[in-house]
Length: 544
Figure 1 (spheres, one colour):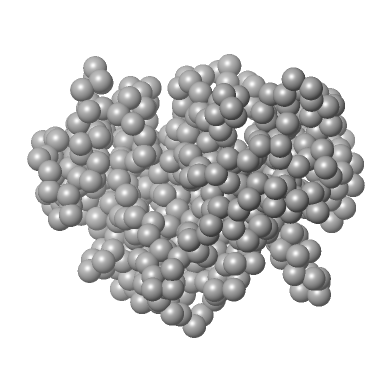
Figure 2 (cartoon, one colour):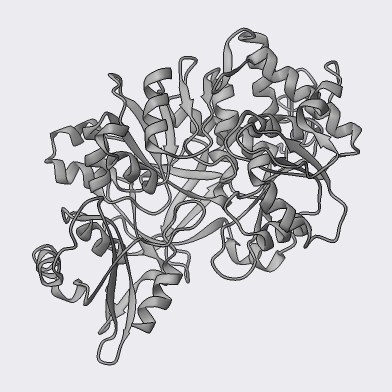
């Protein structure tokens, strides 16, 4: 048996610059600028950039950063809203082999300072809107960081650094021969998790992973040359789920949005005939419950991808009613954002609405560029039966899994185990191959020896006509060990219901032991990415 390199299929069939090019999402822009030079690539209010102009601005920025001394694997941080400069950074920084570090705009100064120090930022690009926050953060940083200011007519602030963004671009060489990368495993991005305890962890992406993630998103989301993508998802979150690159790969148009406000979203959808947008379930809730005077009319269907906490089926119902087609995704910062998609099956159209929406709320099946997703026993690593009942942990394997956590080998070893990336999310596996999350491992409520899924209880509560958002956590109980405690955020204008009526509503729809024993009304605390902060609610429940 011949297994050496003398086999005819190996001899003289070597890698060559013509047939082997390291994968990098930067190539999407060079191709788009060559193929669609005059097409509008980016819209930001009155600003319009064609693909030729976008490439020119990115090359100039790459040149300017190199002139500032940025070299291979140096970190370039950026803190900005969803503006063109964020898109430009996602191409310009990797052009010179540096690492882009998009910072969460909703962090406090201490966390921003930690990220700058931990990531060893050499340059920081600052949107003027966040200058006051960054000024406080820089006072806590004991390293030299070159600061580049992005001017904003809405936020006239004194410059933080010595460099103005547009002036820097003007000084950049439009003919700059940017080096790119020779190794597709080279680090491309550094994204910090929105940790709830302790310091956030720095997730590292590669050029190869970003390239494949972008293609996977574009393919699954149906992006084409005619797509108009509205930026309702923060670009600092998992690099905007790779969409700064994915839309360019398709040759589509990106519409920028500084703040997630329903009136502005509806206006831009109608004005630009937006075809696609992404966002957490909280964004969908904002749109579904927006007052009529904030809704601009549009006649086309908008495709929406949502991820984060599992959205209740009521979200799908309400969004469908106002012209949006929602697809549920699942993933994490560690998987470049989405790793699974709930692919709609045509036979679901024949199901009753409740069952159809319940199917749509599942986490679904592996993304095209994900090698495999399993639901397994975390102790034995053996897959659970596909019976829709047995609970296991979701695990992912593929090229769109992070390289690891920066400077944190212990955390990396706990997450990348054997052949899998462990999620910490508990789910069941259905016979049709779809996974369905039941809870985070820490959120399962054990009452009198019975396991209660907080997501199941939340699903029922959000079917109540007065409830917009629900979060259920464990409350210590001397008899049962712990019991469900429900925190309820009501719909705008809704009167607070009677506790007995809500409990009766739940009892009619679930086993009695799962019914919340305690109800608390008011706005729910949320993370910077719109996730409900259950750790705060657990503290509050423990003090009740």
